[in-house]
Length: 168
Image 1: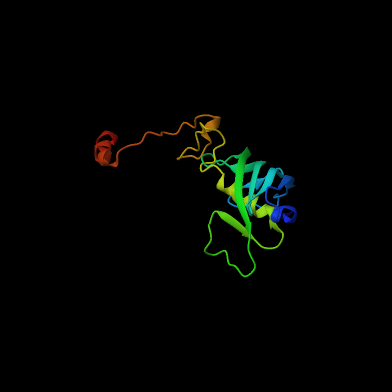
Image 2: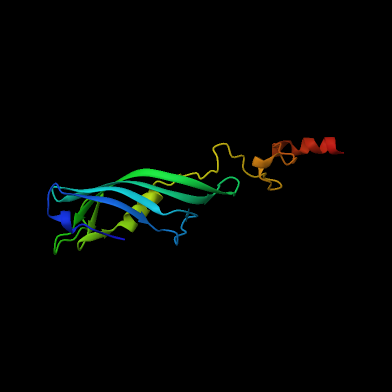
């Protein structure tokens, strides 16, 4: 979705409110499934020619747990803040500040800016619950649903020769 910034680009101090729902349901990247539209509610303010975008982002995502491989939902909510600046004619933004998003024309693609912020705010470890027990390394049973009965004692391989004395 293109966010039209024309009304505030050349008007210092002007504000543009944003209240949008973005549909990312067709995107399945990095094991992330978008289960609901992405709600973006915020404002763009022109501060001396630089546009400051601040918004609250909310959505519901679907993941596979990193420990037990079960599907679970994750309600994500975070604040984002970006600086935007229109590229001047004949000027390249290559050597400019990397913290500023440069755009041409009269607007920016809000989808791309929001999607980048979503992926920057994803949890590093995706767990269905904080105390997820994971899978049994021997039989593969999900330990969240009960013990499997496998012998999970870890033996030091240096003592294998001693174990052979007791097995004879």
